Image (cartoon, rainbow, N blue to C red; front, side, top):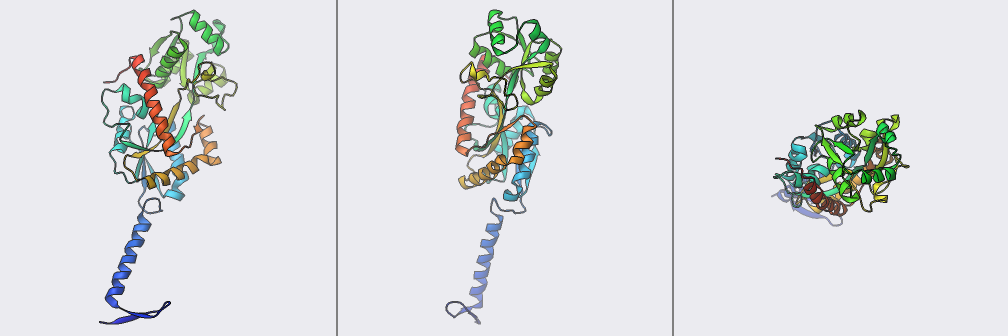
Length: 339
């Protein structure tokens, strides 16, 4: 057996076979480190968006994927729409819990759909590990400007007073039974102690057109969608549904200023499959929270009327559980059901 001299603090002689084994072991450790999650390895992270390309959730996912690539490596945004978001959410739930597949959790997929659908292929309580909330987008109570003028309604207080004095004489539209606008309206009616007729339409755009044409009196609409018509004067904004006023409409009160605790906003965040290691969740959380806090990200999200909401993983988990509990009663009172 041949020997080789290794110079260090002490000089010793080692057999070639032992040197080879040592080098192979070191090479294995190097491979493990360079391919471990969170390094800039060739393997990309897949970020599953359970909705079609081009919408606000898809846009924000792509913005964040670009922002975190220096820390996490390449992030591929993959759209898996269908069944109200359930197909994409189920894909994440059944993915390997290794951090290479993560997904968007939204109001619909993780708070509304469990009560709206008689069967879901996933369990929101047990199949996901929260990472961080991403955004919230205010919904806004908007009224047809001509209708408001005719009824002498100038602000939220006027609206409440008129609606309570004329039960059933106001109606509102939504994108369909079980939609965000419908459920916001039902929660509002319950909390305010008033009655207004709900008129469902086949999607948000037809509901908005019905409001603009005067077929319905008011809607609960996404602020980003309603903003152009508010600016043009075709609609008047009476109140926002977030707990506090929106920076985009600082003079418009929050409903919560009158109805304490009222909050119905559109939100989404990041989740991983359940059983994803805590160290992986922490690394993902740190990367995405840092991206959400950057001035560039805030500026780009402001164009969507969206407010970044970076959180800890635990805080996002608590928030999702509270939203799930809140919407149970709202959906049941609305009578909405799918399949």
